[in-house]
Amino acid sequence: MRPWNYGVLGLVFLAAGCATFDVRTDYDVSADFSRYTTYNFADVPTHPTAVLFSPLNQERMREAIAAAMEERGYKQAIEPDLLVHINLVTTERQKLFANYNYSYWGPRNDYVINYTEGTLVIDLTDAARHKLVWQGVAVGIVKEGSRNVEQQIGKVVEQLFAKYPYTAGTGGERIAR
Image (tube, rainbow, N blue to C red):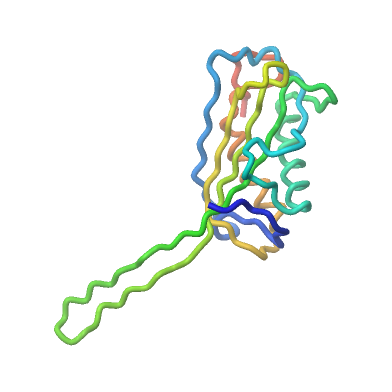
């Protein structure tokens, strides 16, 4: 794996318009989510080898996350209850497609597709206890140079936070949609 450490003209998971993501979330069942009403963004990545992506996409990601948090009643604060950590790591992948032609005269037509898989991780940590309380992970194909970067980032964040079950100050209530 290599960290995403240079400016990206565009970040898009899968093809524009029909993007699907492998989205997983998990949370600490012992965390008292009713205590959390404020948030802010962490200054550094949580993993020492993970580097935040381009400044433009970093800002787009922060704006999308801020909108998702505020939709759930959280307020951004200097001394927050929750810290938001954003990490993006990419991995170069290959997929082999084999065309088994069993005819006597025909050769076998195999081909390889090279692509970059991106893993976006959003961690919410309890700022007082320095403990992870929720994590959202989206995995998909990274496509550079898209024109709809902001929209695609918004879709990824929306899909992750659709699985975030809480609103600010409520311990067990799910957000109504």
